[in-house]
Length: 388
Image 1 (cartoon, helix red, strand yellow):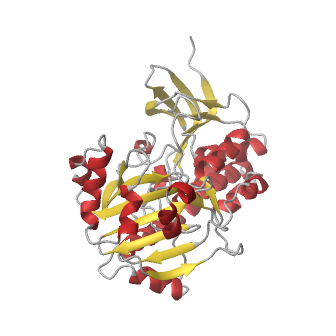
Image 2: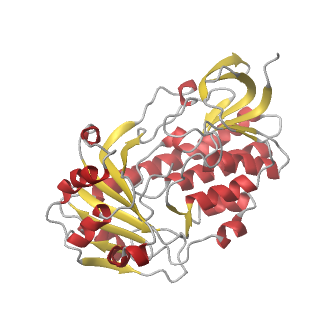
Image 3: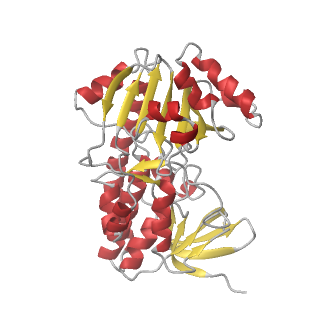
């Protein structure tokens, strides 16, 4: 049997990979998408995303999906509350509908993208084992089930631990010094009214030195909570997350003396806590042009979530790459070079902002840094949650 060949192969059916496929499809260019999940419903897709006007929204316009996005925006989701460890309100801002970063459930946005693509374009259950150059920009991709295919243009949209990245870079994500334990409180207004009031209608930052609770209200009325702790990388290994009560106690040991209403965000969780270490590629990660291959999103520039940029960058990377290919038919190398020339500096700026945001959120006088930022109108930090 001959090896299948695809002119354009996109590895990863996350927001970035799907957006690239959609932008190309709009312009009559078909690409094949390969994803390790068995189906679109194989796993949950995370919480809320704040979609920025200059990046994520611009990408959705390029994909012809902006109106569908607006129809699914979470009304009130741009509200922000900043509390100290005693639950004292240090800053509060409601969502009056005029902000430039509307919130949408990640799963809802992904469903919009999936529904915009032709049946059969995405190959599910296709976990990439490796890839190798064949010359003249072509690559062979091998799958863990023993299959393989070739492609003229290979795009790694396969996230933090990308298998495609090794074709262009030796960089590996490094631990950022912060770990999360994620929790959900479902039907919060009815079942967890105190927590619902603490979080409010949008995003909550309850911060202290080296730790904090980051939470947001989701469109289904649940609360998604991140208990963040500056800790050694091995800290989570010592917590038995199969025992929800024991895991909750272990996490809350780092919040001794905090207000009961804040501790309840973890203590009253519905279901198991989920551990997550925060990793990032080096700020300014880039590579020399390699024929026939490039990266987008977390595969290219994984960063901490403390500026809400990850998903937005994946979206705008994908749109920029797709439009560059459309504008340069027959010259993919010129398209890739143009895309990377735009993507590299944009990603470096966002990664530096994200790293600085993490240092500011958990500094010794927290939450003062965040309060100063909001009251001084020096920008926004919202959607502080993993982006991919």
